[in-house]
Image 1 (cartoon, rainbow, N blue to C red):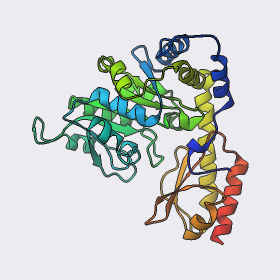
Image 2 (image 1 turned 60 degrees about the vertical axis):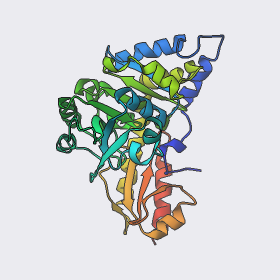
Image 3 (image 1 turned 90 degrees about the vertical axis):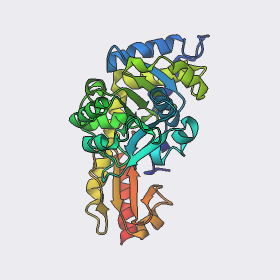
Image 4 (image 1 turned 180 degrees about the horizontal axis):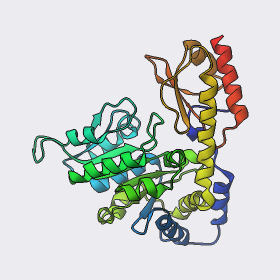
Length: 340
């Protein structure tokens, strides 16, 4: 099966598998005290700066919940977009697990603006209103759009003006870095991001997720938070090995570059098909389009993909690190046949 439903459908990269085999020798300390995790901690400082601290977790939902818990007190809230992953695709985990309120703001492109964020900080000190404490942005967004370096810097400025923290949900952070053509630190550390949910599973890893703290003031209780939220991996060397392989030799960049490139090819090809309307700027590895019902009915059994909005027939097509030009052209051929 070749899928355009999600980059989660893709297999793990061979280098990632090999990294796990390489550390599968002898005994090593558990719960993150191992030699592999220590190497990862050094590497993460090289990539994100000397203050950066990494804490591997099991999955992306866990990364977001752990990150948010570290920044929030029980009466505080999170500002995000209405399309944010933490709002619509975490099964209510932030609300259920840590009991926080999400203040979700509507946007046309899944991107918050400084003006929106500034206006969301209201009723300061009012015990009847959940107090905004975290601004959470997704990079790249659920609509495949990307915050520029300056946009993130401006959001950090307004967030910190209100004595709040900026969280970056980076499930597809590699695709965003490739789209911006800058290192990770350029749009995180240097812009004033406080905490990152760092993702690799969608870009060739098996369970490559972590929370990266750029604000050292937030790590006092993180080990206890990670443990009580069931995100502490006893054999952490295997998770750390994946993340190390991801960051070394630019594997993250090579994987994301191919995924983004294939999405551009797909968008170019389908834009020429009658009845297909691209709805969002294609910046990373996703293509959003409104299509005839015949495309949904006839193509999904052969090439699975998601219907994003059933009311309008807007669909999402995702490319992966292993998507080939032949995959794209076969998919486009199926779409053309379904339209005709």
